Image 1 (cartoon, helix red, strand yellow):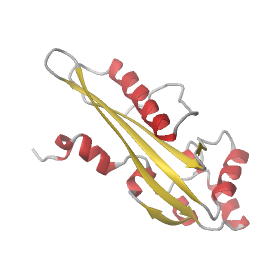
Image 2 (cartoon, rainbow, N blue to C red):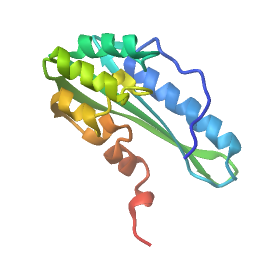
Image 3 (tube, one colour):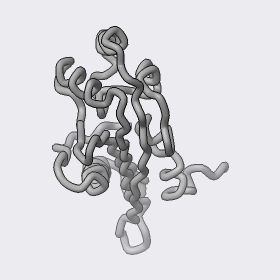
Length: 168
C-alpha cells in the first residue's frame, strides 16, 4: 500500500468529492504500477451539514472538529476507484462506488476531549478521530458499515472486486 501524493478536492457535492479523490489516487498509483495490476484508490471524508471537515492541520483544528461533532450525527463517505487489470485491447477496467455511514457522537465532556487530543490519535484522520482506536469512546452509535468509518468500506470493495475474496 502506497499513499498517492495528490491535491485532494475539498469543495463540491460530498459523493463527488470522495469519488474524485479516489479516482485521482488510483490514477496516480496506477501510473507507477506494473501493467495488469489491480490498483485501488480510496478516500474517506467526514461531512457535517454537507461540508467536509477534512483532516485537522493542528490540535486546535482537531479540537474545533470534535467540539462541532459532539452530541451530533455526521456522515462518513468512503469512495473507492479500482483500475485494472487491463481488459483486452489494453484499456484498464474501471470500477467505482461510494459507501455511506451515519455516526452519532456522545456529548463530549472537556476531560474526555482533552484526553483524546493528548493521545495524538486525531492526527491525519478525517474528522479528527479514529473509530478503530481510542476514538471509539467518542461514538454513541453507527448506522451503516463501520469498516467504511475505519477507512476501507469492505462490503463495497467486495461488490466491486469479488475476485479479491475468492479462495484459490
